[in-house]
Length: 246
Length: 283
Image 1 (cartoon, rainbow over the protein chains, first blue to last red):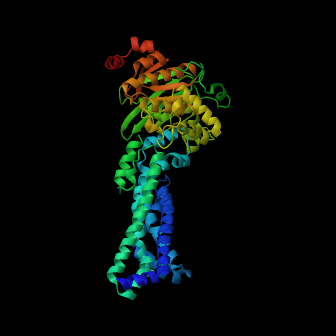
Image 2 (image 1 turned 30 degrees about the vertical axis):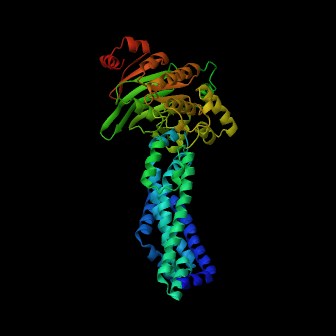
Image 3 (image 1 turned 90 degrees about the horizontal axis):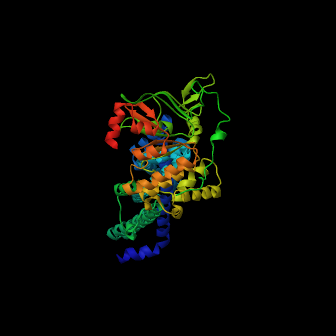
């Protein structure tokens, strides 16, 4: 074990850059996924059949094809096909964004549909345009309900980043894998990975709980201090905000 | 409560200027609202069955009748929350449910037409339907700013006047969830008035309130009825309110008006047996 840790401290710069790659892949992938979630999700609740159709096809395709294969496609199959080559990190960001964007669009669609119809009718009675109804009335209320599901997806996305190892991006997984190969300390190496990913995931959970708290406070809903540390299921959140929206 | 005139614009006179010629009806002044053989079906279920009635400008009309007789549907059609299955609704001489094509024929209304038509109409709902993510003041200012293009300062000044009118001047920064049902309904009334409607639709606005909160809301509505020239169409089970406030009572049954007249006439000497039965049951 001491071998591992002396090598660990010797390799600190590589480890830091590995962690940085993992964080970049997570954050940039999540931002792309968030953008796609809203674009595809809002298309899927559109009145226009063609928008709903396009969204459906895209969502089913990226949800129905494996993330592994999407990564391999972007990294190995796209360059000979198009002549363009993305860096491994960018491949990861695009694949994570597309895959989780497809899942996220369903979250957006569900949350938008769960806002009581009476809210839509009140906005019509005030003669708001369809765009303004969505932006000012429906989305702010749907947003609170999206956060718990988005938290789940974000953590899943983080936990998928070790796949970057498969396309030789120098992420945390890759760097520690190399450490393990050099020192032969399998147990310590994997224990380190386990703990690191758990800490990262928990930090993300706390951040998202903070976001949820502020979103709920804007709805005038009570939020106790305990809600920060509590893991909450999406169903629970939906039930509590639906009650508050009356 | 409010003894001063309400801070509402009297839009009635201004609106009479740029309107198209009216189809047949009005030798005695054009009705503001006219249902012309309106049919509303949900699948096979006929809710309104060739409904004809009209409302004069400034008239306060109460719609009464048993549950399921189509009263609320009438308000929802007027607010364009539902589409007519057949027939035409006219508001101020213009078709509400339809767009007039260049050749004079009527086609189902487009969203653009509906946005124009809705300008004159406001609605207060049974369940208030306040926006829970906006504070009280923003609930009232949002639409005047974003729909009417009013400046934020002006909208807030007017909103505060309206809150004063509905007796909630201290609640500007409250969230709807912190208010009682009666208070929420007053905010909803202020929110509807802030859009300066010519026609105000009230859909069982006291039905969801605790009994002790009903009187305050009804008193407010009586004030509005007396002090403004807003035309009110009111679906209610509060017969005293109907008697005190409205000029005309329409008795509905099975999607048709079976009797209409002044409150005294309807409540003391109804012509129709069905009306008599209904009033005996509710009074």
